[in-house]
Image 1: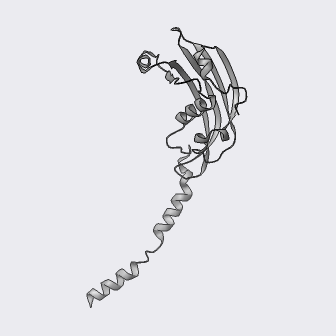
Image 2: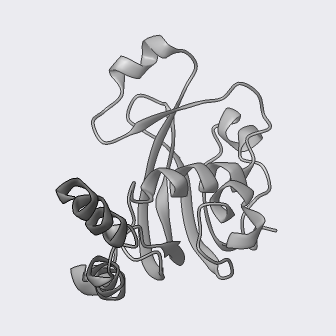
Image 3: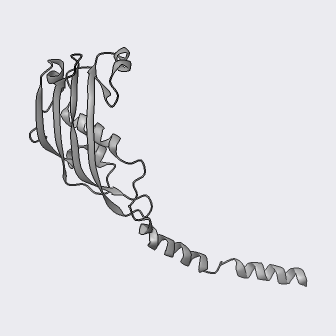
Length: 171
């Protein structure tokens, strides 16, 4: 499933294992991400480095890159979103340690050793997606505006009833 990446990161993080992993993961193997996409396919390129910071805490740093097909919320067409997501996590045991983390890093709580690499990648990717995906060109909804304008120009089917009612009042 994850080419070039370990299946589970939990045991490696618990052991303080220092290493760098580079690989790819198919977008179709990430169900929560796949449900957010306009169309599937493709793969995410992943680079993760397990290391220790100056305080002996285990860190996960890296990059997730790929092209994702999202649905533009302006025109409802498919758009390509170029993902370039920085990963900066520090493994902590409890919430007290969260306040001591350096800026620019997020906490990573390890409840058990079953932290799947795919789950971590999927979480970070979902957090990096735009809240409202939009094409860069604001004219992408040109067809929608033309359709709405055409609907405005169409005569109201109840206009004839209104005329008839006014004629009855005059009589």
